[in-house]
Image 1 (cartoon, rainbow, N blue to C red):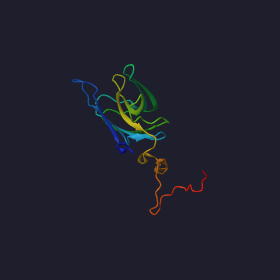
Image 2: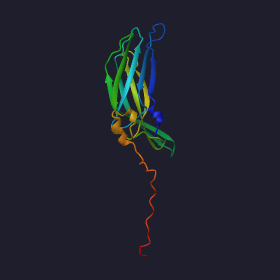
Image 3: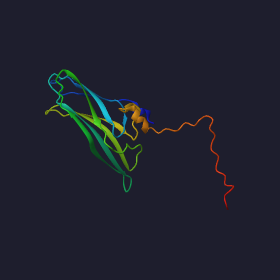
Image 4: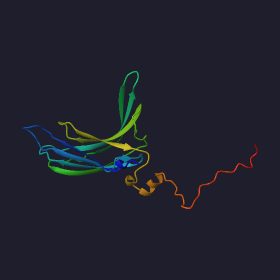
Length: 193
């Protein structure tokens, strides 16, 4: 019902370690998630490509989290908004990306039984995001970036591991034969009054 959720999500980031005159090459990272929408019970498969062009720094590893955000909004007696975040699943890999090298890292995040993303603004709204953290070592601030995703109730057939089992979730309308006539209403002639 939402074709835009079939579009892959891609997030790119460039991190520089130092400034001139001690500058080093940047770290280029690209996170790719194949779909924008998922359902509980599915796994989010992600691909991270890291190109460490730095001549003096190694990367220590990555951590990917699925977070749920609850947003509470009040209008009276005055406008107030509060947000709470909760980590649903975390996946970490300690694979080092050495200086002047490239690495492609693949992984998955499981989606537990959670309520779907909220489609309209109300008093309480729920949203989800995938947060990627690249550990850059003790002397530097870790590189973080996030990608919002939608969690619904029916999985996309294209994102299902077994498309035949996902087809049972899709509501279908029965086909009416071409020559079928509509049923007539019952006759009430024989009813007592």
